[in-house]
Length: 236
Ligand SMILES: [Zn+2]
Picture 1 (cartoon, helix red, strand yellow):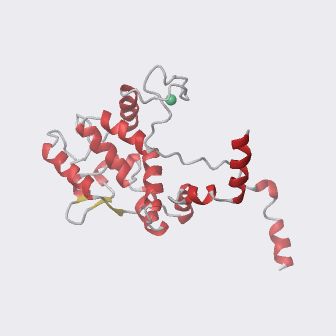
Picture 2: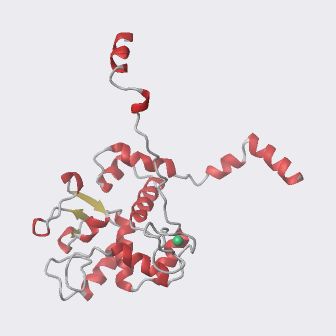
Picture 3: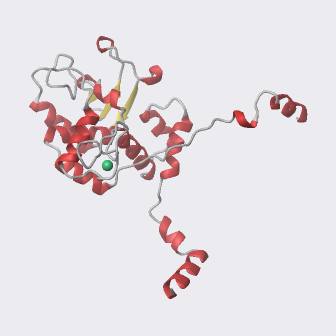
């Protein structure tokens, strides 16, 4: 064993360790989502509900077609589209179950139909093309509704107090929110890995860090150290 350790010591040194910070996975609160969704028009609302309730990546939503939505099996599929030159990440197609509320919203939205939609996309541009502006549109809705934090500056130097640039509103945050909510609702990490399309389980396990049990604060508030803090801080 010692021999093996010595051997590997030559291959990897302490300074070879990857040097990066694991970013906190920011998620939307229920109040933030409610304010945003109230500020949306019906089509926008379906679009961002779709992000929130499928956890799909921006590009995956962009290329989702009506053929991918299975109303009878209550799921949506992420599939390759040769004609649009789209392949899912890691070339793995998958299926994500969707809640009844989203299914009925999609049904209603489909019935209204978009006339100019040659590829049958769920959320095409007005020219019927894949839409690359979902994030800009999200920032514009947040700004219009007065939901910017008013403090941040974008990487291009734009202040969110001046326009639709708030860093608090971004598409991947829907995916983080979806993942954390699934785990809090008791979905297994393995199922979530499938739904998110992670080839590596460790990417999914990151979300376990953010799971909060409902009774967590009851437990920590009852701890001995919390008692000490309560008695000292209440006297101060
Ligand atoms: Zn901001």
